[in-house]
Length: 162
Image (cartoon, rainbow, N blue to C red; front, side, top):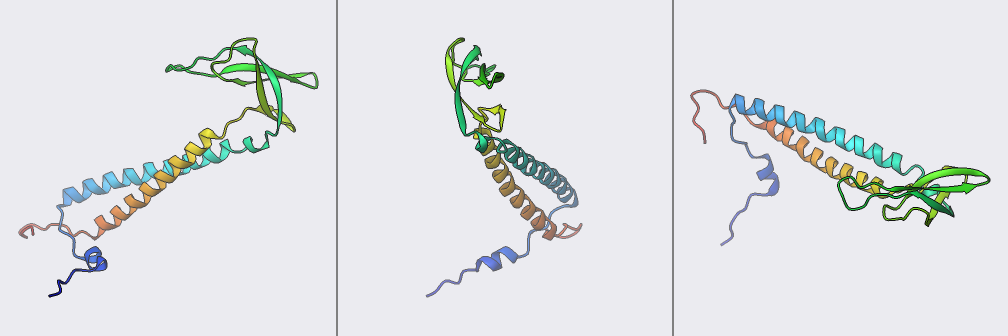
């Protein structure tokens, strides 16, 4: 004996249970806020990621710099130190690792066409792109929820709930 199962399409297009007018208004408001928030997050983190990648691929030259200020590692106020390097008689300032000691030397990567861009990192850009992708996925799911909510009928007075 074969048991009949509803197809995924029949399940997806089946009539939805009715909701009260107040419930639908509250859900519309919540979903509208969610759509706006995730749309802003998707665009914002996507732009931040692309701006962060602007200089990193061009840092092809290396030199050594002297650490001028030590950074702080492993605390809430962690920040990198600073280092200076000289090219063609011009001194440039860059970031140093947080555990570097003052006076020590550190390897510096810089853009030969614009040495003021040195030790730029792409790590934050990758994280920005990942957050933008997750926000886009959630945004698509929220939009599908809005469509589903639009399909739900309003519960009228005098009608019994199913």
